[in-house]
Length: 196
Image 1 (tube, rainbow, N blue to C red):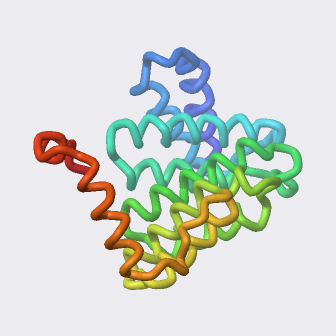
Image 2: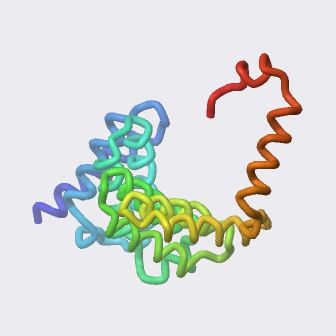
């Protein structure tokens, strides 16, 4: 009964938060809906709308650099999705899982970042759709002391994008290329080059 009360209050508030300008009402509405949880949803057709509102709330939280709250919103949004959501609500599912992976990484939850990333890679309809989570996965590997694997993943992704890193070049060839680049510039140009 309490869950239903939270859900009803949240849905009433959500109807007032349709404008992009009132973040406080949006966040209050979503918090109430999430307290009610997926079990309080009486009309399953509302589920995708609730997931969308959680997506909006999560994006607002990211803008405010509150990645913990953002992750919670995205995770709640995922919990409201119905079975078959990857077929019926592909873009929404992709966005929720992708941003959940990104926020999980930001808060140091590498296990959940990996789980959400793997889900996207499994369900992605194209290489481009999975590209963001490939980047997130590569970063997660680097953060978890898996730098060699991270580099290998990066090289694999770049190769699929048609970028050849010319791994077979020798150290001498790299040094010679650097010398050639440096000798073609004046000292003034080198000193005024922006640091990367």
